[in-house]
Length: 204
Image (cartoon, rainbow, N blue to C red; front, top):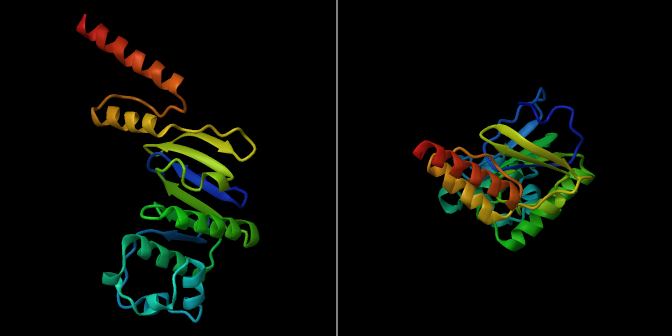
């Protein structure tokens, strides 16, 4: 499955499930929960270390910190700083939203929008949170079990997904009930009725 080839620059939003990102380009930075040795300063290993930390909303005090001094969210921010120093064309964020406050989400919205618009970066946001950076995404890709369910461009009317529906879908899957992702209540109800009919057929 390839979603990065022949794409325009912008923000790509990976939602609901695992997605294997493949591309012919080697110009990719993956921002994940990657642990590093020694201090942040030695890990960043650049004269741009402080500048990149400030871009991800961290200050100079972080330069002397080690991995044991940092939260998971802070480690991802430092890995983002490392990606900014590498200055690659595509930045893939692996569940970067975990642990961010509302204010931090807004800060990173501005940062990623700036990277996409001013520096022509492609930002791939890989998350299960429906609301994460929704308003800045130029393309929304719904994924389940490495299968693309649907894709919406910025010019389309992008539907909202009700979080309780997502929770119900996850609950049904946990009980080994076969069900796909549905974008609205009507589609989900149809699926539930089909499951009920199947159960009735089996019991009869």
